[in-house]
Length: 158
Image (cartoon, rainbow, N blue to C red; front, top):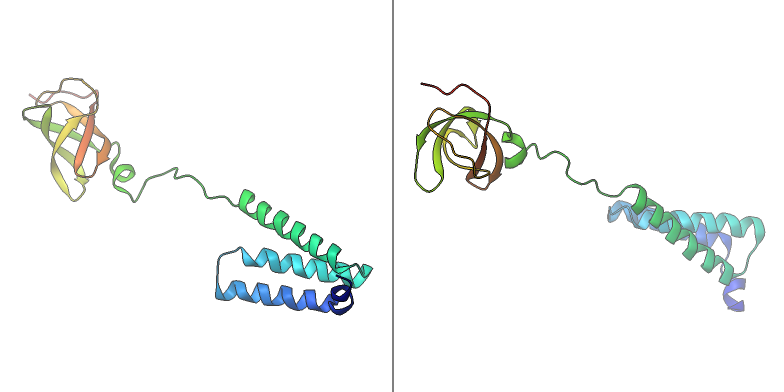
């Protein structure tokens, strides 16, 4: 290790940092940049304090881990809050009226706005509530091409 302490200078760390940061341009992952920033800091510390290579390597490892960990913790991916643009969120709460009672808990409904490209759909109830022709409903969930609805307070068309 003494040989490395005598042959690795502060500017080696600076060049390594620049290469790693430039590597981020080639491989845009926002991971490599933190190793490069740590190398630049180690180069600055080595310039000011002339530390041993073992301490430089330890400092680089520690700084890289702290910077990367801080980045991943601070900029973690957000959970999907809104599903707009996806079938479920975009059509949720769209109002409609039951126009026909089909068998096995299925109904035909006409919606005020097109749902998945059409105003007429065969729907199922979200819960065990009973629906009849003229009942007002709104979309509660969309499972592929199965639309689940819930009954709303609305006038029953006569």
